Amino acid sequence: MGRSRLLGASALIAAGVATPAVAADPIKLELRGYWNSYITLGKIGRDVSGTTGTSYRPETFRYEGEIWFSGETKLDNGTTVGIRIELEGWSNGGGATSTNDQMDEEYLYAFGPWGRIEFGATDAASYKNPNSSPSVLPGWGFQDPTFAIRGSGFASANNGGRDRGTNPGMSASNLNNAGDADKFTYYSPRFAGLQVALSYTPSFAVSAPAATCPFRGGGANFNNCPRNNNTWHNGIDVSANYANKFGDVEVRLAGSYMTAGFDRGTISSGLAATPVAADNASTRYKSWAAGAQLGFHGFTLGGGLGRDNNGLRHDNATRWYTAAIRYDSGPWMTSLGWWGGRNNDANAVAGTQNAPGKDKMDIIELGVAYMLSPGIRLLGGLNYVMGSGQSKSEKADAWAIIVGTGLTF
Image 1 (cartoon, helix red, strand yellow):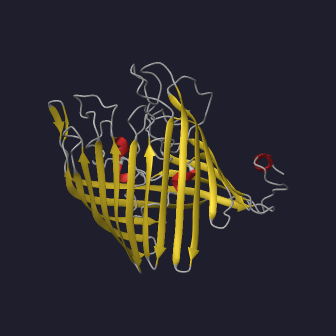
Image 2 (cartoon, rainbow, N blue to C red):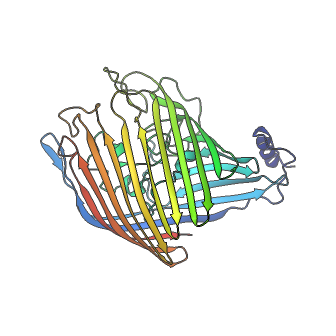
Image 3 (cartoon, helix red, strand yellow):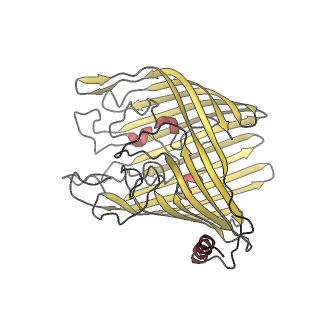
């Protein structure tokens, strides 16, 4: 047995998989991926901070995609071992101090009758099984939508202190907390439709140089990360999901809870939330979510609710609610959904773009998709973001007519 195969077998032994674990065939990589592109035309509310303001052009060209390098092999004991590396298909910046990561996710996995494990830079279990509001527009929807965080313009209005409102989610773990930071996840086998999962993230931060300790935007090697560096640590994501069918009715349920400690450092140092004199920032991170879907003869009705304290003390939690319906008929698909976020924003600084007081954000999305051929979809729809708050920026609205294509390969 070669050295690499011996190491792979040893890793599976450590994970509790019985031996011998010899692969019948070596892993062979294949290419998969997707590409989404859109043209939008609409209006974006003006940001105002003090006596200055920023206006935005109404038209945008947007695209985003990934190339997946993946492969797996089945061992003689029934366990399948694989690897997946995702290359970003868009210009991601660069330089020695860049906080971007051209590799979106990279992780190994193994599964068998005993369950499934994942190790590396990838999302937590609750993110992968939200079972909440459906959408037919890839890159939009309400689960950390790609085009709300990468130059869409919608993230510009109301961005000061309300990014949980402009980056919504439907699960306990999301882009705003652990994201793709290195983690270990175990999924149990599914019993009578029920599956439970546990994800552990040693450390994660709002920003960090790419490929260093806690970068939540992508993978990193943990090389003796410093203590007391204002980073989140020991993140635990516990989730359960249920999927079953009763006659013509499909039922899917999900619930999740995420928590992480805060490794406090000195003021204005470190990578995550910065503690302030009033001590109203940087506390234990806590987030929970629950969702459900019912499917019947092409219709899917889904919704959910949750709470995310954003890692802040006092009255700074985002409470969110969502509901949507989707209908599939042959090559046609359509969906209509709503997501609403509420935050009392006690941490806002008076006189800035934000102001203390209750903020609201409601997002309505209408989507239509047509399957032109396998792997090619024509897309269209409308996205409307409505803000409510104390300042002009908090009250800004944004809407866009959406036309695009979605490719999978």
